[in-house]
Image (tube, rainbow, N blue to C red; front, side, top):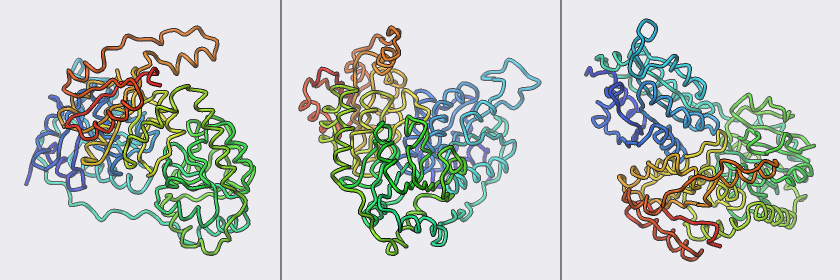
Length: 524
């Protein structure tokens, strides 16, 4: 039956597997809300469009499905651009649907008018397009979902003029059979197999795009060592004897990589935020496997390049692994020694944080999914906290946005009802999106929020000191965070010992509302 286009779009999204939409309604996009309940979609009302975008990001990272957000013209779109930028750098499938004005060239002074809304969104997305008809809107939605499956997942923005949202339209076409991604075949990996056959110290670097549950078996059969990027943590499982962990940013990792006689990097950009140095450190053959051709042609200059997804490559490798002799060049002792040394470095750089992290890890179920913000406790945790499962610690790695942790954790908790989810945030970053606590209370989320309160922008203060700059503008007045949480209807705790902190964390997973657990450096 014919309905206004705004309603038809919600029905189309439901037909393509969307069950939750995050957003804020307004007079310009209210037609998009006409069909949400009728289509059987849950809507989560954020307190700010930035929160809505991060919630959709957190939901996408937890489920692997696209996160969807509805926002209004102008300021709504501008407010969600930061989450779109984060999703772009971290390869998160995010679809933002917005309204737009019908005419901006001949008419001026309109509500929410901006010079170039489409172009603004283009700067932080894979693409930004306007749909001036129902058929164009349907085609763009279809294209977005196809590309989420076939290529590197990145945010898309579709805007629809208000008059088009209000106009009656025929239903969207029934979903097509999804396109199939090209798979790696045995002949494609022949050069890699040849190199593995002669390597005595093969080293794999597994990034967020490695996506396979076969890596532990593959590494074991090959006798290969591995590093993971921060996004690839847990890919080798917990306790693999030849796993160097997420320690690529340690300066000594370059020497280790230089000692390998073959390096295979799967699903990782090997960018600045992965290494914090210009060069990987390798002197041997480098194999790159990635969906993005720009990664394959970067300055690391790989000798063997495969444009493929990590899962397909892993399956092909596993199918041919019986043709490779296991390597014997690595020993568990050298990995253990390196990891012990690097852990000590982390502890020395940020004194007192590692014991807190150890206690937190022991208090959380192994399958807890963690969402962290830009804060020193998270920076240290990404290096020293071994993950039992992949894709269970999410951090705003590339764009590096403050305020990510809480709303993204809410999106993850919405996706993982009945499974443990937690947030780790710093006091300053918490200010950016702390109003989203109201959403977590409304939804009745059993969400521990670990708030590291050192009363300042400590990472920036330390950086200023290293740069011989007198620390300036690094201290802001904090509220009583526990009273603030209680004002929202959440629970709170202010433990004074690690044991008290562990008790509070364990209780928070069973609470009927979120629990803010404020800890300070004095806790150790």
